[in-house]
Image (cartoon, helix red, strand yellow):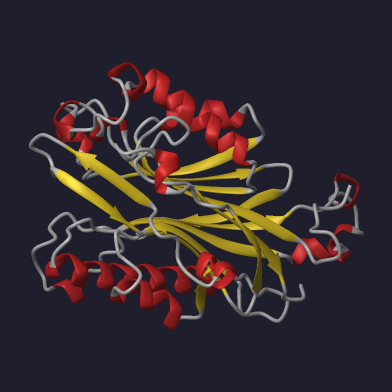
Amino acid sequence: ATPPQVPGSRPYITVVQYNCLADGLSGGDAGFDSLPPDEMAWPKRGFELTRKIIDADADVVCLQEVDHYHDTFRPALHAQGYDGVYREDEWSPCIKTTDGKLADGVAIFYKREKLELLGMHVPFTPRDVKVPPIEERRDAGKCLVARFRMRAPIEQRRGPGWRDYTCAKLDFIVASMHLASEKNEEGVKRREAQALCAMKEILTFKAMSGAGREDRLSPIVVAADLNAQPHEPAVEVFKKLGLMSCYARHIRAEPLFTTWKIRTGPYKPGEAKMTIDYIFAQHSAFDVYDVLAMPRSDEIGPKGLPCRGHPSDHLMLKASLEFIVEP
């Protein structure tokens, strides 16, 4: 069989963006009471998260705040036809909240029957974020970059004919990204610097992967919790470098919100309801064929996220991207 196609169109991929709310950041002093304690506990919430991801049936799944990669996400998704790559945050706040038992990171899962992994890159994140000045820190946030190729049918992957198959040259780059969370002027500046650094790393990885040759375009997709609202400079970084927000392109606006949390207790108490999650794609290489509809506030309920049907304090985003580049 040939790669799946949108009817009457070129090859396409579907991409999910999802901050999963780390187990190590969801209990005790975290202050979430939108679900009963047994439903917030990891055995139940971890199951609901993996089921939601599997039901989304995306080709590429980009996750943040993953602190159960090896014992929850990888085995559940591998059983459903996915392989994955993972970058653990060596400075994860979960280390402190769980006495070193957990550490969160970012992950990229991909359908192994449709895509093959060609390479990956882990940009640098410095330990000391105070010095040197923000613009000199080489801080790319929590970022993981991977390059994939659309797989040819098995009969064309063996023997001399496989190189003639159109998708043998159809490859692309995906980054899963999580930027600084401070909601102040320092945080705004840091996120902009992280976005610039991450994109520099992605473009360098692209150039060193053979992209730029006539037969290797390797367009870029970034799925991220930027912790930045649409008006912030960090969002503009991606647009200025040729990437479009898939939701803004398809529905002519960003979602009304992608996170909504109402927390009590000592850790970041209060309500936060805003758009900070995005799927960006290189506008010269992709058309946005569809996006996942977002729930309304009244469908979530007065206590915000997590809630039944949405087991994280962030909402899942999904975009269907049609290749418009000729391989």
